[in-house]
Length: 259
Image 1 (cartoon, rainbow, N blue to C red):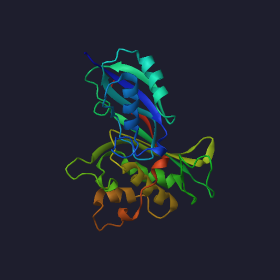
Image 2: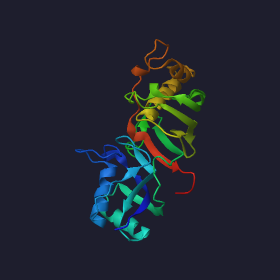
Image 3: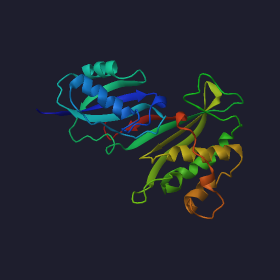
Image 4: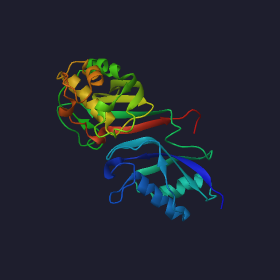
């Protein structure tokens, strides 16, 4: 039977999941999507995503694609999948796309947001989606440091565990720090690049936070990129733990043409 390729725009609250990529023993976003597709179509479908979000991270703009022989309309796919999916995963849009479409390889950029609650006391409402940092942060210094990330660099120092035989060069288009207009205690760090490695964003933002606390100079990011994580330079990045995944959210995936 002839198949067609479909793409979905999905959002999820990732607290209960061990990331996007399917695992044998842990619940994942990919696993839940494939189970819902099986219940709806009766087909064993392999889903691929634009970005493999970390365990506990969230998304409002993840894109996935898959092949199916089902002739149901895209609107029916949305309704049916949202029926079978758990409450914390939702399909927002569905479209038929060219057979050669690849949600990961065809993407030209991905935009992530990291959310920080910067006030003396924690929050009952933001605990699942914000990293609480009670120490006041200097946003101006953080932005100065972030500007060193713009451009094409080898980001291996910020991605511990990245395979040695795989490229760690990425192009960053922007990396910005700002306060939310509605609440100055809410800090937003947004970054856009052609791709990110596992834990790269959380480790990089941890360095920016240490800069904001006054523990590192604003040129520390440049020093890390120049010297590498195994150097005897002035910044020991291994001593800076990554920020928790709960503050991370995939906002958008861009393509050359509207997917």
